[in-house]
Amino acid sequence: GFYLLAAAPCAAILATSVLLNHGLGKLIHRQHGPARAWTTGLGVAFNVLGLAAFKYAFFIDDTFDLGLLDFGTLRLDAWMLPLGISFFTFQAISFLVDVHRRTLATPPDLLSFATYLTFFPQLVAGPIVRATAFLPQLTSPTWNTAPSALKPFVILLIQGMMKKVLLGDVVGNWLVDPAFNDPGSMSKAWILVALYGYSLQVYADFSGYTDMAQGMAGLLGIQLPRNFNFPYRATSPADFWRRWHMSLSQWWRDYVYIPLGGNRRLSGLTWVFLLGMVAWTGMAWGSFGGWLVLSGSVMLAAAWGLMSPTAHTRIATAANALLVMLLGGLWHGAHVNFVTWGAINGLALVAWIVLSPSTQSQWRRALGWLFTFHVVVFSRIWFRAGSLVFWDHGEEAMQPEGAWDIALAMWTALTSPATSTLDGAVDFTTWGALGLMVLGYLLHLMPHSVRTTWEHSVQKWPLWACWLLWMACTVLAVWGGQGQTRPFIYWQF
Image 1 (cartoon, rainbow, N blue to C red):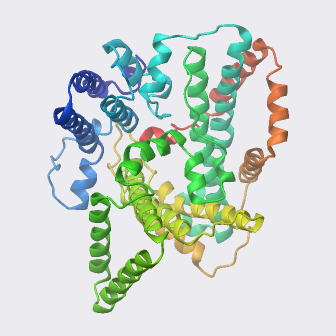
Image 2 (cartoon, rainbow, N blue to C red):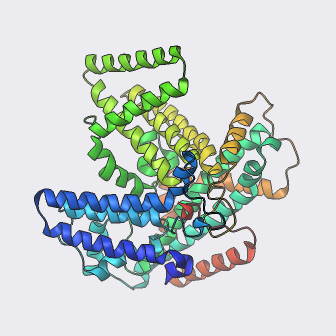
C-alpha cells in the first residue's frame, strides 16, 4: 500500500523482483556444484541488468549518443527509475549470494521474503538490510509493547524529524540553494559556507530518514541496522566510509571489494579496470609526452611493488578501493557528476592508503580529520549539482543538463583570487540558517560523555511526553514548511 501510494506505475517492477528472486533463491538452495554457481550468477546478472535498464538507460544512451531511446513525445522517463530500486535490488543480490554461500541456511517462504524486500520503513532509502539479520526477526518475534521498550523508538522518530526539518530543509532552502542556484553572484566565502551547509544538510536529511525508519520499524518489533556513526568525526577517508551509510559500505565490502581481492591481491577484473584506466588516461592526455609520463608512472609503481614487501598489498587495496568508489558514485546517480564525485573520494582513499604513515599521533589524527572532512565537503560540489532534479513524473529532462556547468562554476568561484568576505545583502533567514548549521555541527561533534548524559536524561521522559513532542514536531513541519519541505535527498537514488 505504501509503495502504491508513492509510485503506483512501478509496483509491477517491485513485484517481479520479489517473485523472481524468491524462486531463484529456492532453486539455488536445491542445487550443488557448478549449477549452483551458474544459477547464482544468472540471478545476480538479472538484478544488475534490471537496475541498468531502469536507472542507466538514458545515461548510457546520452553518453555514447546512441539515440536508441528517442521516441519523440513518448516519455519513457515517466516509468524510469522505480522508487527504491537501488536499495531493493542490492538486498535481492545479497539474498541470492547468502543462499549460495549457505550463510542463509534455509530460504524463506514467499510471504516472509516479500516482507523482507518490501518492508516499508526502509524500502525507498535504506538502510540496506541483510536477509540473515531480518528474516529471523519474523520467525522469532521479540515485539515488546511495554512503554519503556517503545520509548527509544519514539525518540528516534522525534530525532529524525527534527534533523530533517530543521537541519536539513531549513539549512538547504535558506543557505545552500541560493549559492547553487546562482554561484556567479556569490562571494567565495558564502560559497564555502554553503558547501559546509550542504554537508550538514545531506547528513541531517539522510540520517534523519534512517532514524525515522529505525523508529517505525522498532514500533513494529523489527530492529534495523545502524547506518551512521558520527561520520564527520572520521580521521581518515577509510574511517569516513566506515561511518557514513554503513549498510551500503558494508554491502560493497562483502559483495564487491572482498571478491575483487580486497587488501590481499589484484583480481583479473581489477587488472582489466587498471589497464582500462591507463588507456583512457593516455587517450584523454593525447600527447606523446603524456604517454611517456603515464608509462613511466606505471613502471615506477611496478618497481615499487617488486621492491617493497608491503607495496603489493597497498597497491591491491588502493586499486580495489578505487574501483568500488567509482561504482559507488555511479550507484548514486546516472550522471557524470556522480562518477566524478566517486572518483574524487576514491583518489583521496588511494592517496591515504599509499602515503599515510602507520603512526597514530594526535597531530596525524588532527591532520587526517582536516583532510578527510574537506575532501568530503569539496567533492560534494559535484554531488549536489548532480542532484538538481528530483525523480518524478514532471517535465524535467532525465539528466540535469546544467549540472556539470554549475559544479565547474562553483569550483571556479572557490579557486578564483576574489576576496573572501561575507559582505553583501544577507537577510535574517540566511543568518538563521547559518546559526542552525553551527548548532548542527556542534551537536555532531560534542564529546561522548556530554552526549551520553543528554541521552540518559531524555530516556527518563514519560512515553506520553515523547508522543506529544512528536505530534508537535509534525504539526510544526506541516504548518511551517509550506513551500519549504522537499523529498528526502536519497529518494532519487
